[in-house]
Image (cartoon, rainbow over all chains, first blue to last red; front, side, top):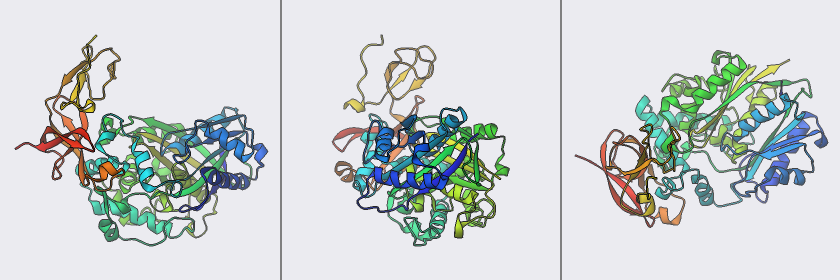
Amino acid sequence: MSFITGVGLTPYGRHDGSSSLDLMSRAAQAAIDDAGLKRAEIDGILCGYSTVSPHIMLATVFAEHFGVRPAYAHAVQVGGATGLAMTMLAHQLVEAGVVRHVLVVAGENRLTGQSRDASIQALAQVGHPDYEVPLGPTIPAYYGLVASRYMHEYGVTEEDLAEFAVLMRAHACTHPGAQFHEPITVADVMASKPVALPLKLLDCCPVSDGGAAFVVSRERTGAAGVKVRGCAQAHTHQHVTAAPALSELGAEIAIARAKEASRLAISDVRYAAVYDSFSVTLAMLLEDLGLAGRGEAAARVRAGWFGRGGEMPLNTHGGLLSYGHCGVGGAMAHLVETHLQMTGRAGNRQVRDASIALLHGDGGVLSSHVSMFLEQVR
Amino acid sequence: MSGERVADWTKGAPAIVYQSCGACGGVQYFHRAFCAACGAPDPRGQRASGKGVVYAVSLVCRAATPETKAHVPYNILLIDCTEGFRMMAHGEKDLAIGDEVAARFETFAGRLVPYFVRVA
């Protein structure tokens, strides 16, 4: 058994003068404080990567900087799925008795630490160095390709995709830490600058500075209990050129394995935290996970299904699209928000019932997937 | 051994090359010293016809490097080639999914790249 015993999150956006280690440290201290632990009680560290400050041993760089001497520490790299992959590993480490309290941490000054072009260029390198990168694709282009096929197969429109950006912005408007607080409309998304069609600027997550962390423990450290009920992964390809058909993507495989591991069904889920690097990512993943029928996710957004008061509240902090995306920490904010919801601490964003949550992360171009169920225990 | 690697556009030659496995019959586009499906060594390099069907399209309007910015907008495609492999390429801006296409070669950011046009 394992519990998420504490969470920490910085605002996302600009943090002028803060390094990746600064942002990691702020989030880590907040998570340790939230768990009611002392630094010395942290005996495991898992961290993500920083594209601004790459290092072959980031976990020990961080441990030294932060002032802890863990019994277990290393970095993990699974692109956007890193946060949940680290959580899955932390769960397994504490369950196996290797360590008692794992600090999972990531942070990056991706917005102010390098130019936006440098970020876009660095990320495009997930493409194949010989067969893709020379063609000048960008991450939005990889997802633009997927979006064109998804729209073609399921009759989805650009206006449909825009609904997801509008929803995430509406949620971000209720969170003081979000990068964006100006409401947007479908028309605004449609009129935003083309990036990699069919994706336009407001279909794309921003580049942000920020940090996020949580503590995964063998026993709960306070009254609130958020238990990892079950999780699973699937990895079908790295490059979009080698991706399987839309109906065979890894999200469906990962969720099937996670349901088996947790003995839960989608009908048990009360809160959803789903990776949303682009509007199309969120649309496709919601459908792959079974949170909407094929090609029907947008209709559910329009009907209020995924709103704070809807049947399946989703990314109530605003997601990557509007809370912000600072690399590995980006999707970890989804878990932080889920924890706040499950422990009744989400304030004006609090949902009625978050007793069972489903989280899903995606890395690469729908390449690597992690699905996880969290359960509120009293 | 299957001999020397057949030159293709990734090496500056105006050709698309794929590999086919003598053991399992599998085809692959990314060059390897073995078949990724069955592991057999030395799949045979073959020149593709350059004919195919558009699987996906994305018009890149925001590029990240000075060399690629000079070309925007450019259309990135995934092409399902007649020989049974999928490849990424450039192509005409008005191509749509399902269009039958044939390859030419054009210079992009100082390199030769496959560029697909619609066949009548």
